[in-house]
Amino acid sequence: MTATVIDGKAFAAKVRGMVGEHVATLKADHGITPGLAVVLVGEDPASQVYVKSKGKMTVEVGMKSVEHRMDADVSEADLLAMIDTLNNDPTIHGILVQLPLPDHLNSDLVINSIDPAKDVDGFHISNVGLLGTGQKAMVPCTPLGSLMMLRDHHGSLSGMNAVVIGRSNIVGKPMAQLLLGDSCTVTIAHSRTKDLAAVVRQADIVVAAVGRAEMVPGDWIKPGATVIDVGINRLDAPEKGEGKTKLVGDVDYASCAAVAGAITPVPGGVGPMTIACLLANTLTACCRANDLAEPTGLTA
Ligand code: GUN
Image 1 (cartoon, rainbow, N blue to C red):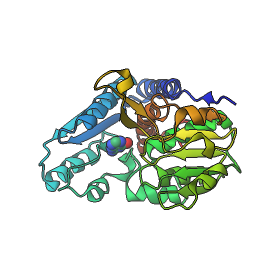
Image 2 (image 1 turned 135 degrees about the vertical axis):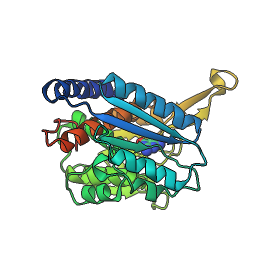
Image 3 (image 1 turned 60 degrees about the vertical axis):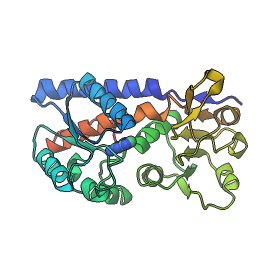
Image 4 (image 1 turned 180 degrees about the vertical axis):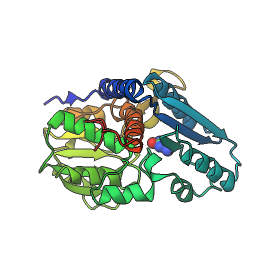
């Protein structure tokens, strides 16, 4: 079998198109423009690239984009004061503090100081609890994007065996909650799981989110299973020339694609969906803040 390639780039463009249309309606009918504020502390090059890309796409869908850059040695009090200002700004509906933060800042404290209704990352402890109890929450963007692709491909996920490899708060745990919410039978596997290969072979859906390049080989995959690869790992690629690198996922793409029924590539799979879902979450937060109907198909 050769797997269907799930085109995350095209799907993300479709999601952004839906967000853009809804934003246009909000503006025309209600005079409301959704606003997203991104706070970046320090000069981390990868974070700067992410933040620039987020800002560009926010503007492209017609939203207000605000970026606050703070020095790497900013005090916790100053960062919390900035978040408080954004919490109280009625033109801002979503707040994202780019992670990782420098070591002297307490990330949990910072994240939990964001108004949960504006927590478009879905990392606030209140949103974690709401998601875990099946209530209306802000849902982390990468798992939400993965869920959207799975629903689009399968329709109903009810009764499917799903194995999530990785137990992070950002991807693994919320992904498992979402799959459970869609009536999958869910296993969370991790670095201490015994006979991981046998566990993964039971899965109709495999979500790989461990952060280890190409660690899932094709012979772990049940024939016809759907593989969602959340990993983004940069490897040296001397075959492309001296000093060149390439991006690979957490699954070995060639061998998994030969067995799976469907698979997301890296790059061009889950990655583009993350920013699209950030925009979707900002729109959702704006609709909720204004007691307006939420967009359909863009939430869990
Ligand atoms: N750093 C890398 N990815 C993310 C993300 O999705 N949200 C935040 N806040 N920081 C990140």
